[in-house]
Length: 313
Image (cartoon, rainbow, N blue to C red):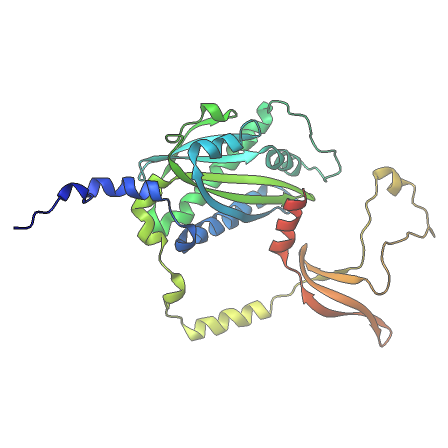
């Protein structure tokens, strides 16, 4: 009679341990990327009423790593908030780096980007920490809404920390997913990040692996046509910008009638076509029937320009 050694067969309670050791494959979790994309959009929507200047949010990276290594990489450079994901039975971390927080303060309190950047490694002020808490509340609400269709949970705020060695959301060698979201405003920017332990994501991995491209949703063709027609009838204002220059308030005060301002451009320079402060197209300047004209040549890759700007900084 053949005997079977059952000691080598993993029992259900060991499954999660094997998954923790192997790590999650981000490429196989399209719904996770979709949730982070939606979170970035919702953060931008919630931040917009707080500032007269536009702020842009876009995911820049989603990766996995050891919790200890992730926290060490942010040591001394961030303010973070620990939240308890009640239904996930786990704790997550939301964080803002210094550039994000300083940019947010200047944007919210009416800055125009003309002030020098804060370079010193000083402690955060009470005003900055209070604003950080408001941003964390918005980010937590955005995160909950983004995961609602996968695994809804409430996020209970626990505390704010500025020292990563005081933060604990799991054992340092346990795996976690870290999602980075870049923010740009006033020609400067920073980074928001979310750290979710892998143990919290394992129970929902099948839902996160769902491919929405294979799901066909029924649409009402009449409603679709009506919606499209209404959008096409919306009036918008376009602005063509050939060149821009930075002036101080003193320069503006010294302007005189008849003064000629030189632009860093030529008739062959490309023109940026904008709508509601959003760059849409690159164009060429021309003339026709006594009017200046622009010919559309190429789309402006907004996300790529945003990410390139973050890298250059």
